[in-house]
Length: 307
Image (cartoon, rainbow, N blue to C red; front, side, top):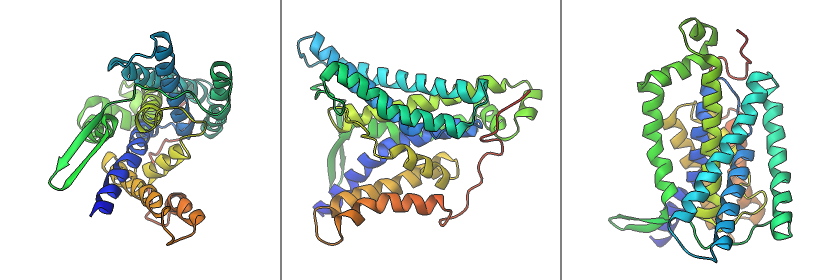
């Protein structure tokens, strides 16, 4: 029973950053902009959050205060949003290839944080550890008891919120229209460019929050490339979930379970370690290859809009 409970909580912890990132990608792709830059946005957000918390601690003499990690989270979200803005400008204003723009951001996310780390910490791989992490909340359901970061609960609570926004509000209707038939939406008075900018920036903010979860919620420092492909797995979950919040929830739980299972199996001798570590990525490739159902993306996704 202890193994099952441990696997349950590990699944929640592994699924949370995927869910936050995939929900962000949902906004972007529903508006018609491919966001392969989610991986880079996570890394920029993670670095910004951890470095912010560390610098506050240094400036205040290492005090522990409840507000410090929330400032780090806010900075991580803002930095993620700014990276989203860069992707939006390249993809929307200058009509650059959205895949190329996203790939450039992902490459930059491997190098730019290392420069900052070198300046601040005299190394290129890790920040200093922080004392002030995001708070934990207790879950007590019958025999299931444990603690998770507050962002885990936030991630799952966002699912019904995103569903309501997309399918029950005028803004969500306009967003979906922009991703399906932007010309028709424009004739009905919808500002296509503004909607796309908003959606891509929002996707960056949610990915930045996912990064902050990794660096000051799940761990207590930034580590170079710590996302370990989470952005790409989130993108696969978005496709597998058919660009729907509930589908994304199910897909991220599946991927989270695969990652949690891989962690549990690493301590045993059931399978070779390399095969165990590859399980989440094999599942990702199967999904992207279309072996588990076919998904129809928004009709205008990846297509620059020309009035």
